[in-house]
Image (tube, rainbow, N blue to C red):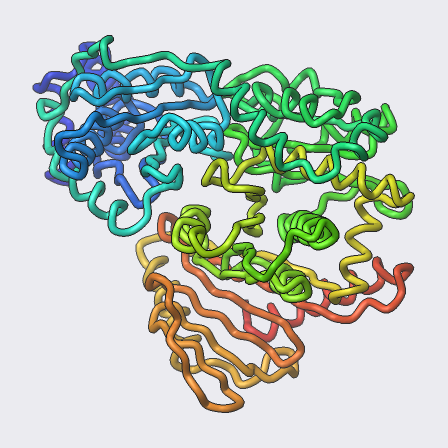
Length: 574
């Protein structure tokens, strides 16, 4: 074992750690040295998004001590930033194993440091935590969740005063304060009940009441309130608010998948609790087929992302990807705002740079500004904060199934997204159409877009070097054409240069530096390359488009675009 690993183990065996943890370490020393080394070879890194890791004993694991050290670092930074003030934080947690326990640990440390702590009485969706921060006037917030990761994982996300996740400079400043916590002896675990207040149903009611004000056609919902909808929380927190929110909107025929309505961090009915994956919606689609439902809605364990299934023109359930669902939401919201006379040129939407350009096309049609931000919903929240005093935010989203309508919360919100998607279904039904028909209408008007994601893993010690070299090659020697189409524009978010290859002009990109590279082709296609910051992966995002002139040609045109993506992938030798 390396010396650092041995030192970490000795620190735990000789330090102020509980006897149970020490017993686990001693057992591993005689039964599984590989597992022991993996648990102690490094410190679980507090990154810009907080903590995320496998649960268990060790410096490289999610446990009482790593959570406590992270919370102490955050508390220290809050006291530095808000001197002589009453500092308040809100804490929520999802259905994962140990989530309640870790939330209690965080509350203990915050209260021990004199920080007034609002702790939810039971599991709650992440977006409600974001809402609670703003509603209760908190300076920060914490949610215990690992989103859609496997059951062995848990995580810790920190938020700032606006209800958004940490962005510069606070993200890196918090990281530095966490790194200064060198020992658990630097952590105050002495819970102070005077600084802890349990919150629950009263926040739920206010939150749902706020969301209900975002409904654009309550009269249509009333008329079509019996639309059959199947909902699954995938064993997560969505069960707490999504059915209640749908009911508040007026939907009376919402069937919940019983097997998946039980909060269970082992996620027994799915391989992965990820609404992006077809398998996760299998039970819900089966129930929808049996009951002749028109819409399937699924939320991930912390209910910030939503996936749907809709019927195509043959009555078969299909799963729109995140770009398609975002397009439905943006199209509906802007069209209804326009018809209501609420657009005056001062509204905006936000998307990430890897999300479909179709959203920008729709926004342009309605004279609504569309801002591009880096990948991560925290940047959408940051953009709202930057311009909301001048412009009015309507909605935003990202390709990875995250959407936010309205700005009551400042994180992706599957609760309001589920309600608006159901409302779009009611609006479609009023016209004798389905959600699939509305999606087809969008393609007929703006062009048929199709997106795809290719994630390449480079394992081993040389993996990171291979990915770095791959990005360097694309930067220094980009192809002139891809699939017979000229590259007419290159955006490099690392060098912060946006280059028009036709005119030769270069503009600055006013976003944080990020290792992202984009090629724009003359036919409207877009290729984005983005290495992962936490895993030995590089992701390639493809977006292609063509005209759709006949609604009966949707399947044929979709197949053509799929083949086009394959050709682009082949041309890039991926």
